[in-house]
Image (cartoon, rainbow, N blue to C red; front, side, top):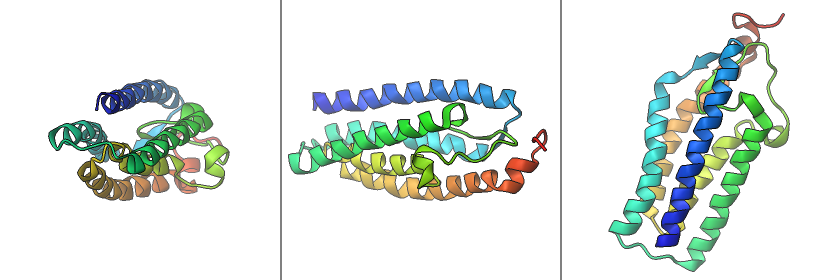
Length: 178
């Protein structure tokens, strides 16, 4: 259990790094006239992601969930792979990566890195991590609860991003390059 707690705390620390990167990138985007979309669902996303991390620990402790090697090791590998995919997305998007939906007018869609094959690869990472991280220590209720709520949230979020990234929004926003 102490190693699992350390793993979850490392993910918490990683989230704070993400927020710092997002804050810096948000300033870069806003300085270039970015417009935010979907601000209303952002607090729900923050609460859900915080609940995932808290649920991993609470369920493991309160329900005395064991580490089952046949489940735990593959789940750990998937959770680490999700982190690698997430940071590949961050690196590929550079200053255009945010935790919010901020669109800088006139910039073309990114089609490099994982975006060559997937429209929203970061959400693949979120889905995988949301199921795998709790299962490292058999917190199956957390994995199931997060996955169901996240599916509903991602429906809203992806629709919002697709609308924001539509050519009519990206190229015709105020201040867009002609």
